Length: 182
Image 1: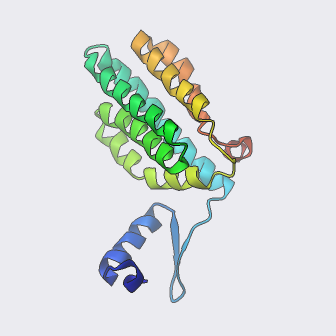
Image 2 (image 1 turned 135 degrees about the vertical axis):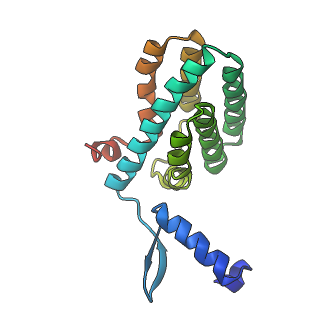
């Protein structure tokens, strides 16, 4: 494997350990490492964590933006990138742009705790988004959801944003996966 990848054993071992701590890879002594299958209950847990982090981050960002509107301009620019990714009709590129948008929200929240929790999620989220069995992401609907969140933030009402954040549950996730969380 090292020869095929063109790396030495130490970086490969370290990368596998990182992936293992993120739940993407499982390792069995004397047998090797394998991609962990995301069953619906683990996927649901990961999504619930993501939704919780993002919900808190969006509210924090809005509170900060009420004092400094330039914060929202950074999210507007990130939304432009996400809209550009839709034009590619490539699930991987779209998924990366979506994660970048939400990472920007977390970073703008100025919370070291949220940032630390978020940084443990992106590989798992990306892995999930790419293996989601639905044949295609409804890119236009996803963009509308992001636009709606930003519109609520520009309106400046924390109560309205709280009501609108429920759309974070719709990350092209099947109902069966979400039901497994409850």
